[in-house]
Length: 189
Image (cartoon, rainbow, N blue to C red; front, side):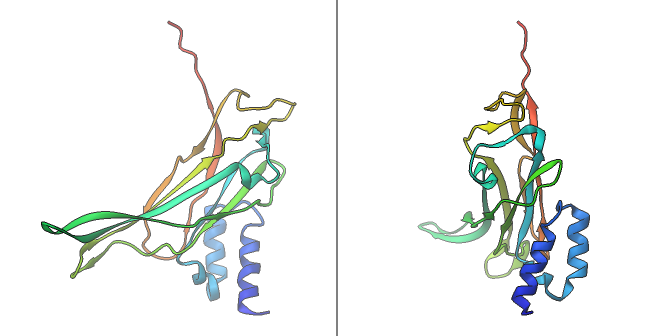
């Protein structure tokens, strides 16, 4: 089996069950021979209880999108001289339908080309790479068990945590998001 085939098989094994922090750490330890292939990656999954329903789309992954970018502090020339400014550079996330179990639906994702951050560069001054990962719900109706449709089972769906912002120090990063119900409260006057 080639190294590429072993890497793909290992990644498939990683996403074959719920991607917890413990499973991720164990995978990195067990697959040291090539887990560094993913050192420039953020990977995780969006997951939610089946009782909340699922997006009314052909694929689960069509119900979500992921935005990600990094900000870099750089010196740029201006008419007044060099000035420090933040540059926003987008990433290209990938996500797909994952393996579900009796309780949860899953949509794994992978974002590559995440640079290491927070270093000093004598030529360009302070240099920070801060990565932002923001999952979003697409504007689709949800099919809820029992025949209900829409978002009105008892509230709205939101992500927990809402987003992830970090400076990548070394190795790959694991970040999963759970879709949870947000109960809408009616305030009496």
